[in-house]
Length: 106
Image (cartoon, rainbow, N blue to C red; front, top):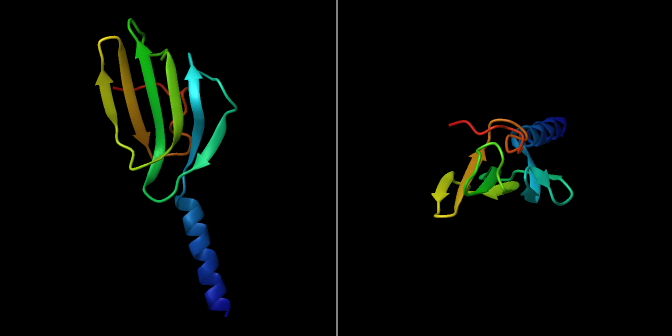
C-alpha cells in the first residue's frame, strides 16, 4: 500500500512539473490588457500562445492589439495583409513565455 501511495504521489508531482503556466488575456490594446489578466495551465498537447496584430504603418515593439492564452496544437504563423500584419507565436520553454513584455526575436 505504501508503495502504491508513493507511486501515485510521484506521478502527481511529475504531472505538475510538466505543466506550463501561461498568460491569459483576450485582448491587449497597445500592450495593456483590456480585461483582468489571468493565467492558464497547459494541458496535453497545449502550449502558451501570443497573437500580435499591427496596423500599417507599425513598429515591431508596439502591436496595436494582442491576445495571450493556452492553445492546443498551436502553430507559429505569420500573415501580412495589405493593411495589417499578424504574428502567432507558440512557446513551451518556461512559464509565462507568452508574456507581452517579452520582445520578439527574429
